[in-house]
Image 1 (cartoon, rainbow, N blue to C red):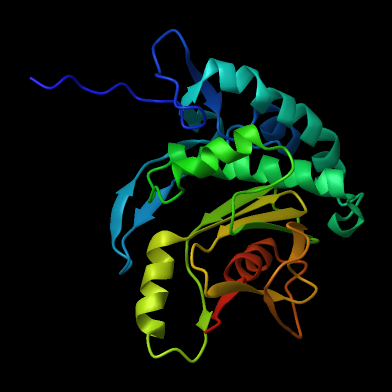
Image 2 (cartoon, helix red, strand yellow):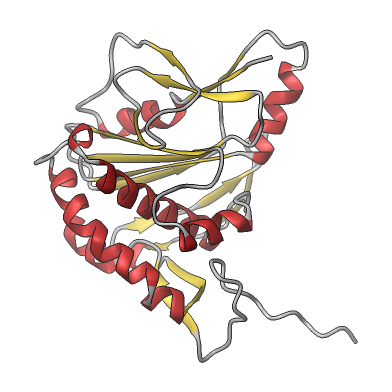
Length: 262
């Protein structure tokens, strides 16, 4: 009989046991308290590519736990990153500072924190697990960069909704390639795009794994955090739903497009 393989920590590959497994909140407790959403009920639903419900479950945000992280990671680099990010996040969430004012070090901390939170969410949710294991390891080991072809963006809105997220590798793919339909399917199956709304702050992290496909940003909306520069396209949008949280996050997430460069 084949012995069942031990589950490993998502970030360091250490075998998980009852003694070293950490039951950490996906959304940190300090943040749940700051936004006053501990008992907010959520119903994460996993849809198929054609919109059919595959799985669904209901619990509070406080009950959304990360079971695939070891205590050494949780109490070590992740805790240090959290402490570094808190003084950056709080004024951004309250609208007391803006993402365009962030210096390079703050952008690096915020980008790494966004990646950590997004990766923890993905590994703990009933959703497509399409984040490469090397990406988990990269953000553990690197404080000043994201994995290759991964980008992070920020923006703020003027609404009052405290929290939401969108996890969907849905892209509007532009280009003249004869294989655009095939490439669009490959992009959806192999990329990821995860957006958060924390108070007035919106954060987005994305991954496009193909050498000939690049992100297309909405000028003035997608503020690059890390990397600050790189190969990308831009388009302009006359109006943005600054005061409507739901529409703003949707436009921020789904408005990040992609283009084929032959």
